[in-house]
Image 1 (spheres, one colour):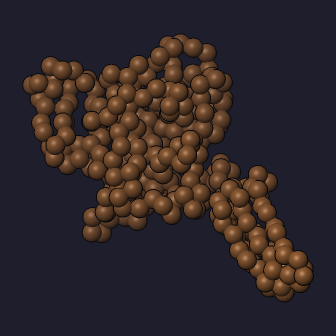
Image 2: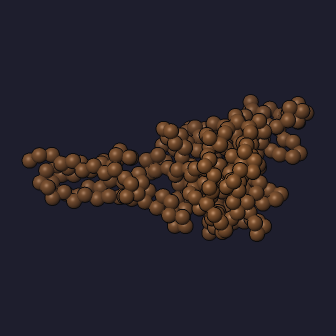
Image 3: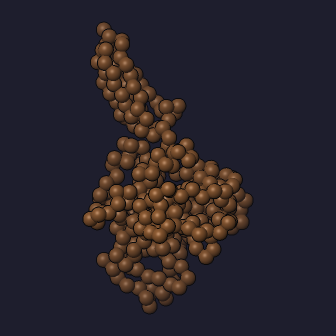
Length: 296
C-alpha cells in the first residue's frame, strides 16, 4: 500500500490500520512472504479480477468458487515465483476444468456455505519452485478450534512476490453461522479472496481454510473449512482419500497386542480374542503401522 494513501485515507479500526487505494487492496497488518515460504500459493487471473489459490497437487488448485463465477474461457494460474523471476518457464498455466461444489449458490457469492472450487490445470506446473500444500489429518484438525492461531495469506505491496501473511486467531461464529465457515480476526480485503488459511504442524503448512469473504472494517475474515469438504475434494482429485481410514486388527494370538499408527500416534490395545482399530493419518500404502504383541 502507498504511504500517501495511508496518510490520506487510513482509518484505525480495533487498533489495526485499514487503508485502500484505487488500484489494489492489500492484506492489513501482515508481513511480506516469499515463494520459498509459501511454495503452494498461486494467483488466479481472469481480467479484471485476481484471486489467490493453493496447489493441492500437480493437477489441481483450490480457490473460492465466486472467484471464477462468469470466468472467461481462459483462466490463468500463475505461481507466485513468476512475479520475482518474471517470465521463467513453467510458472503460468491455464485451466482445463472448473469444478464448483454442488451446494455453491452463485447468488450468495462469498456468503455461500460452499464457496469452494477446484481448478484442474491443462498441464502440471514444471517450475522447480512449486509445491503442493498438505491437508490436515483428523488428529490435526481436532486441534483447530476457537482461539487457534492461523496464518492468512493475501496481497502485500512490499513483497517481491506480491504476497504477505498475517497471524490471527479463530473467533466464535456468529449466531446462525454456517458450520462450514471459519471466522478469523484478520483484516483481509477483496484482493485476498481464495487465499489459503494455514496452521503450522512442525515444518509443514496445513491447509485448513480458503478465504471466502473479507470485511476489513470489522477486522473479520470468513473462510471455508477445507476439512468440511475433504470427501468432495477426494472424490474429484483422489487427494486425502485415505485420511481417516480405519485399520482393524483381529487378535487371535492369545496375548495382548498393541496396534499403532506411528504417523498419527493413534493406537489401540487389543486383548486376546478381541478386535481393535486405529484411524490412520494417511494412505494405508504410506502409513507406518506397528503391531506389537506380548509374550505368553
